[in-house]
Amino acid sequence: MRSRREDHGVARRANAILLLDDGKSCQAIAEFLYLDDDTIRGWYKTYREAGWDALSTDSWKGDQSRMTPAQEAELCAWLDERFCRSTVEIRAHIAAQYGLDYSHSGGIKLLARLGYEYRKLKGLPRVASEEKQAEFIALY
Image (cartoon, rainbow, N blue to C red; front, side, top):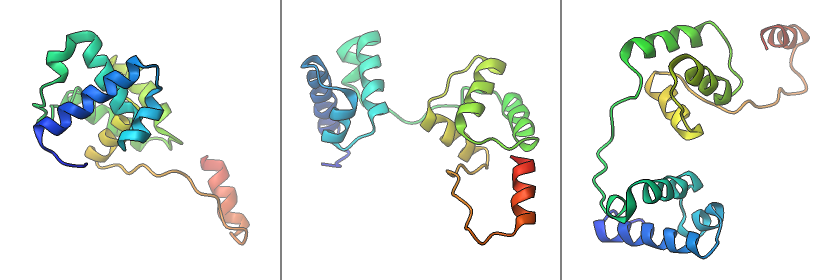
């Protein structure tokens, strides 16, 4: 199932488009095909914009960043000055500042490439010191 053969990938994309045509949701298709629902949405967008010929080729070799090195440096400086709770705030800044829209997963990948780490916040243990909690609240 996880084969990287060309014909297997084309068949999966064709199945996804046919299931969408049958009225299935992206999430249901993604669960069925063991994929991320953003992948299904991306395939459907490609199909709508460029047709089956664009979707039936598997020539993905990666891509250059949509941000210039200067923009990436500006973003790193901006990130170093603040504590961001989620990628939503970062993606909104990128969209407002540079006019580029990143998906949630794209934002996480961008952060990783720039040397930042995204982790979902976890609750503090009940025995944490009051001083450290006060520092965190002030920072937060």
